[in-house]
Image (cartoon, rainbow, N blue to C red; front, side, top):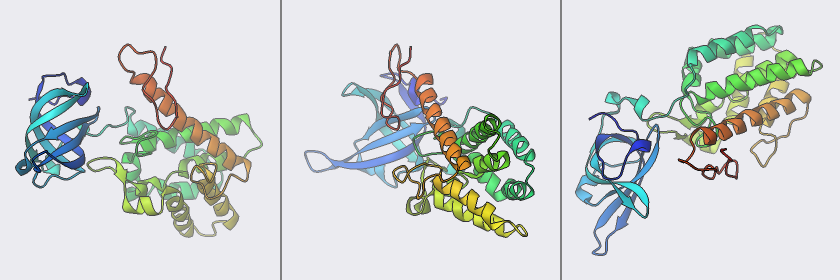
Length: 311
């Protein structure tokens, strides 16, 4: 049976396919025996499911892949899957392109455009530190796949590359509008502002936070990664490193939004606004491009703290 996207499932439809397990909650029937409420998902969204038989819940854990056999029913005016059979699946045999949402933009094209922007940098030290990341195969393998967030903006495979490319383009454009700014610092700051996110998120079976990501966070990861790369470049200017590190530390804008310091010079301030522009634009477009059927307003977008007008 071909994979049916969760977003396309109809009431009464039978399914037999692999799905991701996002959550497993054990509950109790009136007779004291357990049953299980699951949150399952694929690249199109999530759906609740119910499993009545404890024996079939053995080895059932979140962030895994299972084969589900069952039927789509209605519960409290919402579709859910009544599970008849559930089987763990070997992750090495799974087509994750069906289960994890990915950027719709071509990764190699985005990377080529990003390399072109970096290639135009004239400052030898800024070019060197940018290339230290671009030429690091292990870093780039993660950079091309990582999401840019857990469930806010660009929260899909390849989202970090997409977001970084767009922020860097915005920074380049702003440097042309404001010629008194340091164009090279703007471009390289845009490229490097979120490098720490390769350590913040996990994205093997589902997108989530790594333990280190929860305890430290991408901003401090990025600060340290810049320090490490600069140490490999002979005579890298300490003040230039300080400026880059400040841009990474301050790009969220305020303490309330996660930055330990606020932007203290114009390129850092513009990086904050470029990052905010791209992240919020992505969330508006996501709401606009995935509208409820025949509705005037989107569902409530929690990070934006509003619904989006769709007409």
